[in-house]
Image (cartoon, rainbow, N blue to C red; front, top):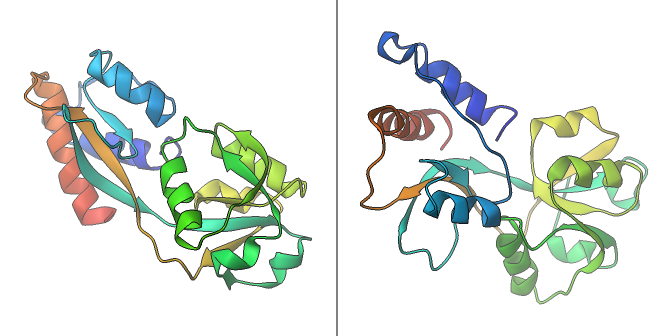
Length: 197
């Protein structure tokens, strides 16, 4: 989100004359650390994964991301352009840690096909993941992010199981937020619906 989506939203929001002087304070982290900070009012809005059992938080879809299999260029699976997830079962995975908001979705995909992935290591974020994949330390399932083009990896579409991965704009329900934050929230949701979804 930090490489393209957030900068695109901020750039387009501040093009409007009445938003030119709006300033932002940004924080970055995994969804499981962002949600408690949002509840503790460290910030007004969060762009994150959906989290179950958070009745005080409103999660509104902002954008979609395709999940893909990423392998080293010299990996046996690199001969394919797309693959069923079940056909990766024999290979060792570099997996997102438990703090990742993406982890529950990835776990559910493996559960759906009744496969326990072989996990070689866990990482916190996707650049570390793709770096390890590029040296053939393992394969990964991750969002199709633009920076993948800068590594010696092959990106494979996932045929089965079918899935949708949404990124949400989260805020506290029934809670005051500043007019500037409200204006950005409304803009981001309109912009996301038109350009991202």
